[in-house]
Length: 129
Image (tube, rainbow, N blue to C red; front, side, top):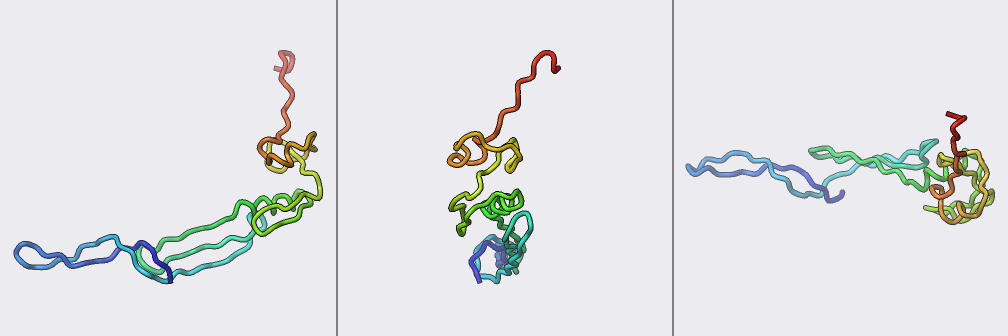
């Protein structure tokens, strides 16, 4: 059970003394259901569902596990930590996409991450247009 935002009803009174139900937002300790899964592209993730109105759901995916799955698919060797890369055993390859096919020309992508390690496309000349 976990604390969560829920909607409940409470009695309110009219000036003549009669009561009527009113929906209010409050917090309550309610049951949560977790489903732990593993995907080929995203790695481990979980779905969390609330058992009380408004029956909220939550999908939690870890970006580091996604990057590890993509690196493994591309054949990049690495030492994985629980939530990060400990070391590269094969130099990563860089291009415009996250995992590409052009080899890195510097150690910049090892230290700065994928975004700064994109190879530039050659400039188009007037003859190419």
